[in-house]
Length: 130
Image (spheres, rainbow, N blue to C red):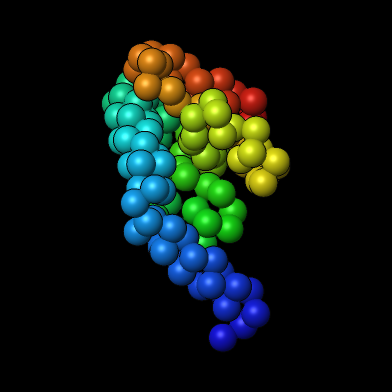
């Protein structure tokens, strides 16, 4: 097992232990709710053919833990298909996520946001990726 893989496995195990702790469970539950909201918005964008497809990263995967990526989105820019990735979080944690993963766009989803607002945030982030 390589050093990077061993480090990743150790971090993943630490996160799994944190998730089992009663005082931390609410933060992970909120994250799951944000992911569900993002999936609904992304599906609407796909249905309207504004994006081609999307894939959430697996929970506790290398992309999620090390790279800080929650979603991949494919879309067309003219005749070329492009891939965009981003993370989602609440406004309260956005700066921390941006500092930790400066190359990953962060989209904030707050529970007061409506579907159109979330879709607009996603499309704005994609437009800045072109």
